[in-house]
Amino acid sequence: MTRHFLRDDDLTPSEQRDVLELALAFRSDRYIRTPLTGPRAVAVIFDKPTLRTQISFSTGIAELGGFPLVVDGKLAQIGQRESVADTAHVLGRQVAAIVWRTHAQERLDQMAEHAGVPVVNALTDEFHPCQILADLATIALHRGGTGRLAGQTLAYIGDGANNMSHSYLLGGATAGLHVRIGTPEGYLPDAGVLADAQRIAAETGGSVAVVHSREEAVAGADVVATDTWVSMGQEEQAQLRETPFVPFRLDAATLALARPDAIVLHCLPAYRGKEITAEVIDGPQSVVWDEAEFRLHAQKALLSWLLERA
Ligand code: NVA
Image 1 (cartoon, rainbow, N blue to C red):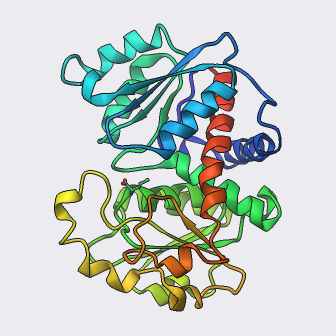
Image 2 (cartoon, protein in one colour; image 1 turned 180 degrees about the horizontal axis):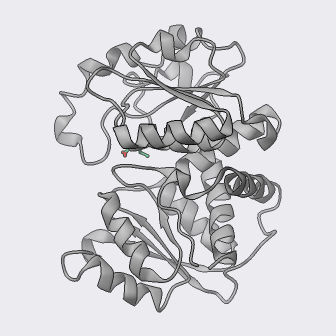
């Protein structure tokens, strides 16, 4: 049966480990697998802005021997000019896989239901699972391998209701991490996602917690992460979304609460002086450039893994 990667828990803990191992292997040798040799095409569709994702998927697909067909969602108008299901049938007859950045998760689910080829979530309003694969691979790199992931404490401070928070919960729990979300009241993660993460954590030995102070979230953490307070599509609420998050800014004083060897993650783009200070993101504990590079390796690993099972 065709496998998809629509949300982080579409991979079991052992499958996630295999993909992360492969991501680390791709970092050492970019051409260890070329499943798209032909070249076979992969559709990479964007209904929202992009830079890292377009570059990393395009580069990755080319390095896998394939051809990236980047589609501007504004031109394609999926769901407007024709239904998501009809688009899925058309694409599925031609390309090896479909990578899609869109708004509602439901659109992605429909694409997966009808495409007949692997569908990958390149960010939705609800999840950003490819980013979490890159983050986990980065943590593994800095902590001595995937075997060291379980038991690490990851603190994410900022918008608890956004795609990164949800993906840290699900993907982190799958890896056996202790995930602490530090977020203001009123920005809680989706209750269903939290429950799913709790269930997964119970199996992997990890844990998940939502707290309302940065101190509680960050104290003793091995990894500290944050994300923009204003996600794509929320630009009109920018003013409104500033004040509640100021107490959750990742600054030097906050980072000092974590373990002395804690590493700092940010999915980028970063807004220095807002969710993170320049001192922290440009400081010695920041590994954000490794993290950005791992988008390439992790997505190649994921695509290879999915194509082997398609
Ligand atoms: N939460 C952010 C992530 C950007 C990679 C957004 O959705 O805009």
